[in-house]
Length: 131
Image 1 (cartoon, helix red, strand yellow):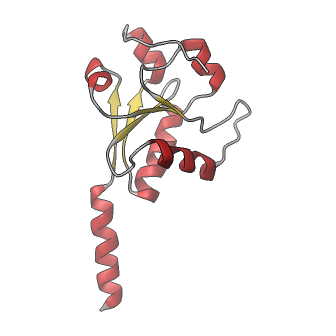
Image 2: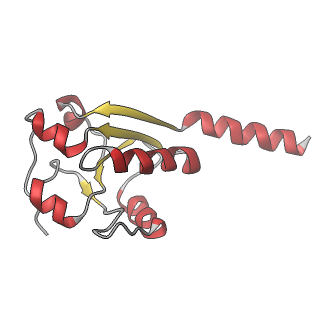
């Protein structure tokens, strides 16, 4: 009986977490949903960032990553009990990270398709990265 209850609890928790895919739009930029930019500092400097976005690098320039460090920063800067969005250069990195966060940690994540490249092509505003 306990095993059945445990399985039902796990299943019901997973129903509340999701990953959605959405192209960058003015609607997302104007929303109160936090946008986490997972690119590298070099990329942030090269293209700028979404205004008020939260910059937390996932992969470094060599392709290395540290999930624990990323999660510690993410949980420090974002209320992960509420929906938030991820953006990278083209959307390929965020798809992997968003999928992981939704499936393994039950976070409600929006993967911004096309990334900053799509955002800039759509003439949506970015601001310089300064740090």
